[in-house]
Image (cartoon, rainbow, N blue to C red; front, side):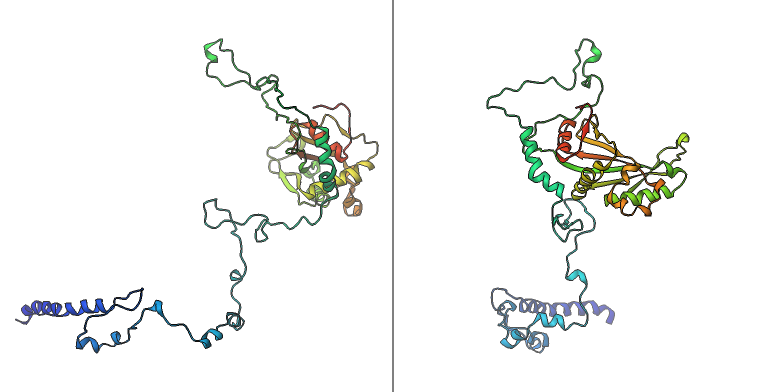
Length: 360
């Protein structure tokens, strides 16, 4: 009998508690504009509840101003100095992200000119002597010498297309791509007139040395690397052979050559040493051959073992290098010029001597 009456008694209990819940919800309602809403007249049981007695009568947004003693006692610097240990370094110093995760990532690295960037390079503190000469004298002279005046209204002569078209004399020629120029399929860079926007300048210098003695003695590669690093100021990159060549005793993946790439001040300093310290001291050296170049504005020359010894970094520590292991190397000067003629004009203005027939 008691079990049968339990559901009905439980339902009466829920009905009796329903008004109380409604009153509680209306009593706890707060308003941000001012004081809390006026609650309904509470029952005697609710007045005895401690939770409702502790409710604030005013909104938290309309709280009173703290006292002057609390304001004067607030000192964050004193609080920071009173810590037993400092916070992590990441709280005091900004660190740029280690990896670049694309333009849409929320954390973008700062520009290279920002000192907080991982790629920031301080300087330039002073121009290199050759670079300063280029900026102050050579650049203006090149623009003056190569300037081509075109009066207003000059009609430019149309040049023949670089790619040859088919004459469509055969049905097999329809829809075929255009042919390359006669004599080869390589399209050279188009030479443009020099103006103030495209004055030729040195972009980078690459020094390369093939160490043939490294096939039998690996010490020759180490000596060559030390010498090139002293001359260029750049740590050389070791290159390995891709294929085996039995005639030269070369096996695949064997370290065989070194390269050093220089840009900016290092490139100008190296060219300055070559022009003013090494080239004038080479015995019976006619100069750089006039036919050098790759038809794209890059100039090449080489130094043999006797010429490499004349570099001041090698000459002052000559006893440190075994004489038979000092290698020669090739110098590749890459410029912003679009033709060998303009590149040769730039290098001649800087002081590189050329001889023989000039090939453009």
